[in-house]
Every structure is written in C-alpha cells, then in structure tokens.
Length: 125
Image (cartoon, rainbow, N blue to C red):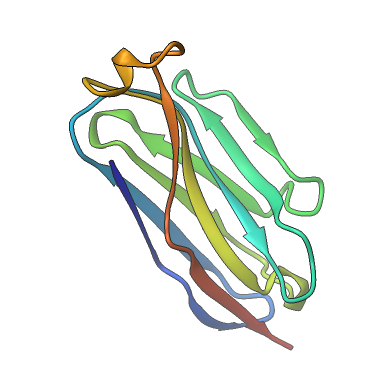
C-alpha cells in the first residue's frame, strides 16, 4: 500500500489550498484517513481525521477553516484549507488507519496503518 500526497505550496495569509492523498494497492477497506502536520521545531499534531462513515475530528486550531472529506471508492482523502494563517505552515502528512489487504488479513488485527510522504504548506504573512 502506498499513500501519495499532493497539493502543498506557497500561499499568502488568508488564502486557500486543497491537499489530497490517494492510497493505492490491493486495498479491501480503510477504516479512517486523515492528516497530521509538523512545523519546524514542533511535534507532529493531528489536523483532521475522517472515518469510513464520514465522522470527523478536527484540531481546535483549524475548526471552521479546514474541511476534510474522502472518496471511499477511490481511497482518497482531501483537506480543504481556507483562511490560512502563517502558523499553518508545516509539512502535512496523510495517513490511512486500519487498512485491510489480502496481506494484512494474516495479521492478528487484520489491518495495518500507512503514511504518505508529506507535502509542504507555507503560508506567508
């Protein structure tokens, strides 16, 4: 299973960006997908999380500005980021949690987790 993230870039404060992340491979199902971010000198933090049923969780710092959604059929997750602030500058990593494949079904849990390579978002003031 591979996750590829796209959509990062440079944007001015107040602007918008949309990230997306596609999971590929012989995937049977994905329980949840989402995004973490890591700013220079800071720990990685959860930005947004979405289950296969569409339930979402957001970091307090992005509520009302970011929207996460997914296409289950395409194993793709999106992050629409509006009203961006300089403090949103970070490398954004997508993840897929509870991924079932023919291989993972041999594991005791039957699933595994995977990460994308990260995409840089820079918000200038």
